[in-house]
Length: 211
Image 1 (cartoon, one colour):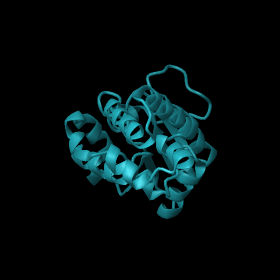
Image 2: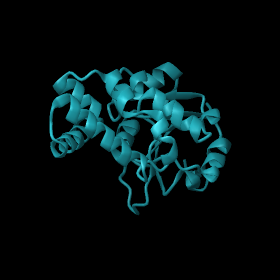
Image 3: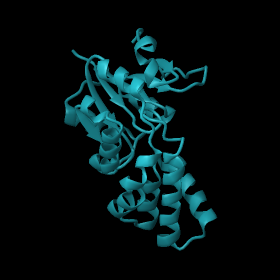
């Protein structure tokens, strides 16, 4: 059976930590300040707490404050403000293009963000499907229910899937479901549920020969 590569987006297919994440953290904090009537320091602390506890800030806001998820996602991920924060990477694009098998993006970002970022980075043509958190009933990774939705909708056998991620929590879930796992990290050691560690997607071909 042909392989399917399932890629995370942020800090996997592009360097979100450079400018995108700081921008999104600020827009989310501003949203919390405005809608929950908090000061900015408390909003940042709440945002981080929910991200660590639930895997996504939105999940905590929905569960504990009744925040409208669609309004939150579209307000905090306004695409025109992001274009100048994205770095083009021609080498990475070439590596993705020439990987054998199907390729899918599965992100905790909203669908319009996943589509917009991959299109702006000229990566969209190389993927057969794109999934944001609002395409999997607002269930974020690392919840296995989210992974199962993608597997079911794409009719994939997890034994023939390779999850490429920067998040260990997400890779742990993917491995538990039977996928092979690739960790995007410069950390020298890797946990047992990671099959391969590479510094960048640019190193996938060389690093994944053992998969």
